[in-house]
Length: 171
Image 1: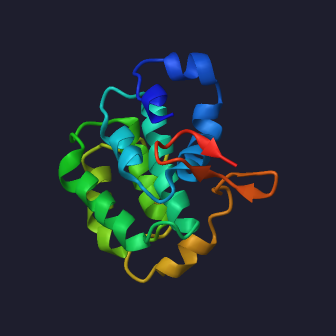
Image 2: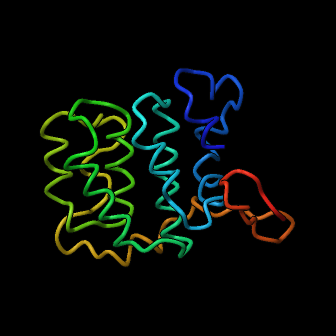
Image 3: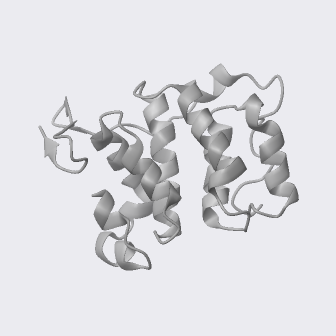
């Protein structure tokens, strides 16, 4: 699955349609079995479609919500994206990074978020600094419990399991 969505351009949309923007985050989270390495490779792949990269960021938040990853491990990874792994040029991946970071109520990344707005990296039409509280005193516990849209997929009442290759489901 990751190999397919790693392709650049519009091919993922041409073949998968709205799945990219509507369901890919849950799909990636569901087949990862808590192994976020392939999801991270999508995020860091500058050749991948910008909306695929955004879905991969949302998948990490879904894994936190689902209890498969710790908030701290994802915040640590987001810190590396803010500070070193992403080129400091405006792109949709920055919009999604800020939005996903704000979902986790990241007091520790408040200055990085502010700096990304100040540098014009974030499209304020997509996410506004006034959208959600994320600064000191905002309360990280409030954020995770209030995320309703993100969920791990289940099939027929059974959770999907991965065969270790992230993409083939065993039900």
